[in-house]
Image 1: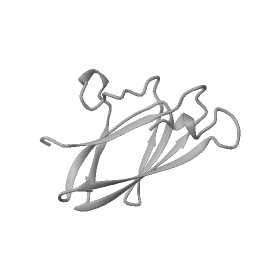
Image 2: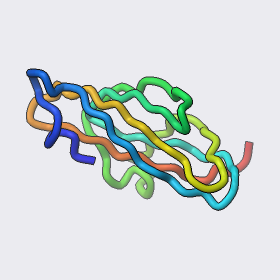
Image 3: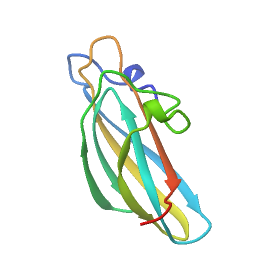
Image 4: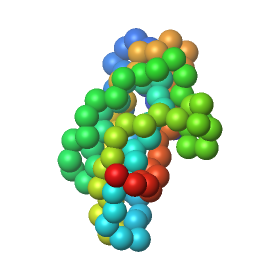
Length: 108
């Protein structure tokens, strides 16, 4: 998500909310992965997951490139539809964006 197109470096539009629906073919634990140059707050199905600090680079290939992997913890998806809400705080000069993904967990 390129957030810099809707948030401002300075001004009244520093905060934006993004919503996504994620489908799951069963209730299961997954690994949450986030790569962001924005400060984020995230909710999954109404449950607050926490704050996620920005980094210098938002890696588009963070799900496939082990050098760019960003693990943020494990979360539980419901069977069927899951709601993800992300609050973005902009303020990064001439940029802004994040990538978000879920992957099945392996092992303990």
